Length: 321
Image (tube, rainbow, N blue to C red):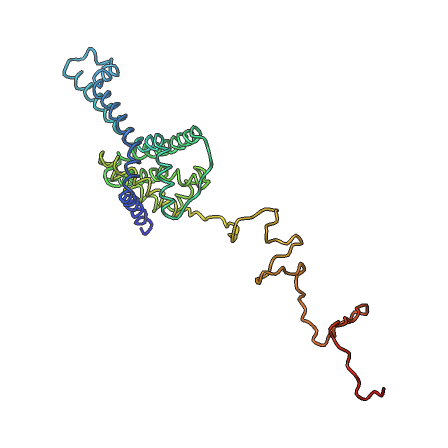
């Protein structure tokens, strides 16, 4: 339960981060708004042509009496609209992340920067990133659909299907929603999809806590759009927790720029550098052994004594003329 609460905290911390950075919140709304407009247009077309779709799907009811025929086709049309709405809810996040890949990558990088820095990630062309994102999203969607079919069948179990199964469904949907949202920051850390799934399974409670809270928010259509930027920010914070990034140890900073191989005006050509008093230092390093205090200076046998031309000869007072 501790990790479950931590996941919820990451969700709210993400919303708080975008609240403090309003410009990035507006920036992150763009892909969600584009997806929402597209989905609303498709649903509007589906509603308008639901009757024609129902008539096409039920040719066997053409010769039925009018009340039965209309009842069956209304039910089929309503089911078609309901299934379309359900698919829109299930795929909204994946499609939004696919459309907003460049947007959310920039948002995630900004979150990393404000929280102490993160990895740069591989330098891939945009089409390669979109292809990888679409492939990973499809794989996650197929996994979620498999669990959805199983839970749908379990829903027919008396009592359990109406109480336990919906809760499990929210938790499963939340886990796969966390997998989707953490894809960008974890991919920058060099983790493939199988590695990301393995990592999130090791922190299942945290992933479910983050995603289940988001699923409950997404049940309200307006919050689906408004909470999306904060969801991306919170997923980045969660990724930093489960896969922390460490900066590589760099070289020690130098005191100044390297002047290159050319000798400067204060450099000695023999390799000696001036001492503190400005005089050139000896080109050889000092001896590590102490000086001998008993050592006598060596006299130069070839040195001639210097005569003083201004010195007057002294007379010997004891010398007889």
